[in-house]
Structure formats: C-alpha cells, structure tokens
Image (cartoon, rainbow, N blue to C red):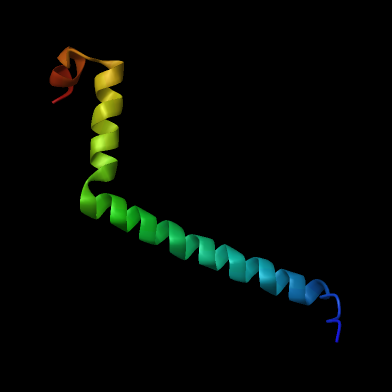
Length: 61
C-alpha cells in the first residue's frame, strides 16, 4: 500500500517535531560540552590564538 502524501497540517506537525528534536539534541550537546570542559578548552585555545602572550587578557581581569 502506498501512503498518501501528507497534507499541510501534517507537514507543519512534522516540522515542529523535527525542530523539537533538534532543540533537545542541542541541549544535550551543550550540557555535554559544559560538563566535560570541551567548550572551556575551545574558548581558551581560541583566546590563545588571538592573544598568544595573554597580556590583553590579564588587563581584563
């Protein structure tokens, strides 16, 4: 049996379901990054690339 093509209401529901799944996945990824320190290490490495000596960052503290 060939399923019918979804109507506009079904497409809207599918899109909202997928959007909710993406939000949940993003929340899990953010939680994992913050718990393991991956995000902190990434930001620290990025700062080291921008200001290798750390002189400007010391002035901000």
